[in-house]
Image (cartoon, rainbow, N blue to C red):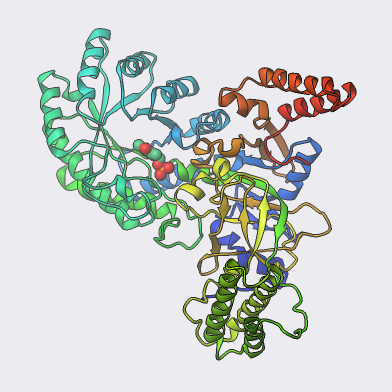
Length: 637
Ligand SMILES: *Cc1c(COP(=O)(O)O)cnc(C)c1O
């Protein structure tokens, strides 16, 4: 078992322990005051604002935890970085085309996020990618026709196609990417009916496979994209209709979060071969769209581990530009406009989930009382084992202890020992395990089976949030996000813990954390202190988490706060959105809050009639019921 550093209580040690300078990308750090600071770039300078100051502002405004905090500056900064990096690579390599990014709406559809991307991105001509009719409506409403492109992926019916074609009349550059052969007849028909020639793209299914969690969306069995045979058929059909010149864009998407730069390079290379041959077939290609995949280094390890990436943004951009040039130049084909549909990398940093800890369960054994006459033999054995623990016999002691305890449990099941005897045995067992855990750091080699000991002894910290609503990927795909206390970072965190949420689901927990040397099973935390609130933050949650979240146990949307941080470190609450009330979530599952109130009123009224409560007690109970209706779905102060 590898052990992480133990923080002695300085902010530098805390930074190392939680890895904040590795995954924080310069946007997050620990201030001298022991709190996490958001570091906003202003030119060459970074200006910090304490998350605790922001939390204090939330409290003054009566906003309860959990809160999803959006930091608008970080969204802007990531859009700038992406565009600036591509533009730098293009200038440095003297590439003949331009870069035009589009943000895939599905990655975060929230109105204010899309609004900010459209507003800030306009200076770069940043556009939007729509994968459905609803998303196309969002794109049309937010973009100026003369700035960003609209790329339409996904299955397109007549209505979708008709709207997209008419958008061309308004001046939008709106591409239909053909994903399946069945879309072509619809597009041809609508185009003829409206008398508008479409801007078409072709989605190719690359044979390149990528590593990472989404590797299934690449390769032969990818569910999207045309096979070579389908592409040839499409070219022939379009030529027949004298519309081959409408094909202007080549598109592929290998999946999200591609950790390895080699996979990115080999996909671009393969796509360029399609580009060359389709040009030679007569398609009027001028745009190469590489889809998403630009990864976020969630664990800060800079490796090709699933939730990391082994390349920088500059490397990503220059590798792409260079690969396109070296493939197209020998063929004498001019450089296309490069499009990427980077979603995750653009929004991940800008949101932080903040929640408070409600309670803690510790697995600390109590004092073991002195032996008494006539004690069960197995208890005596456990006592002896406890006395004998030393660095040389850890495995043996653990085996013995587990055996004796197992026997005691069996006897209890058969009614041969009493509850108090079993409880004593369990307590001594825990003492033995603690003793073994204390010796482990000194052991030369951690015996097999004992590497999970620390985990089995760790505390459970109960957080005021729902994994299912706010961190669905933790539950669905075991994603790791950086998580840490946002204050008290100049105090040593003396506890090891896992985190449980407030749903009643055993999956509602976080038990994988970012460690100095890879994933660790427990998180170092501070003991709760005299009733003071203890706040944790889950970072880099801006991509995919919000709309994939669900209503498990009817925990609804959290409160959302958007802040903008100024050059002097002050900040504005630019938006506050109240989370769902209980009435809101009940109506999502078809209850009518008014009717529930009425039903409850009748029940209470009957209790008055039966003499169980007085009429004024009825009023108090009824008011409690209707106040709950209006309340937050999470634990309220
Ligand atoms: C999901 C998706 C994206 C976004 O990918 P990221 O890895 O988040 O950048 C881009 N394009 C298409 C077609 C997608 O389905």
